[in-house]
Length: 150
Image (cartoon, one colour):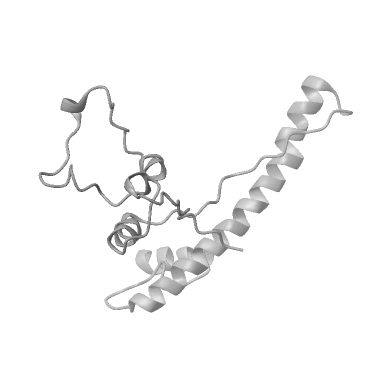
């Protein structure tokens, strides 16, 4: 009974069945559709939270500290969808120039110190050929892998 209730509550919150109740089987395509649905619902909820907090809590704080005649800052959450590591690796393998700075920042990888080459670990045989990032590309065209959803 407890599992049934948990499943029903999850369905009500996420708005989908497969994202909360995969069970013993499920297809990848259906899971992908449900992931997209969950992302869309999350984006809509984020906008509602932004509006509610801006019009209530932030408005109250500004009114209390600066007066009601002042403009209020608008709260905005970042909703940028970043590709997963497999997408980046596949792009590199296909020869698509990828900005190395974006890889470091998006995947939270510490950037190596160029002044200390002994502290930089690179798999044997890769150091001279490069990793296929745009920094090593002769044309140095950058591709922004940020996927924007409407």
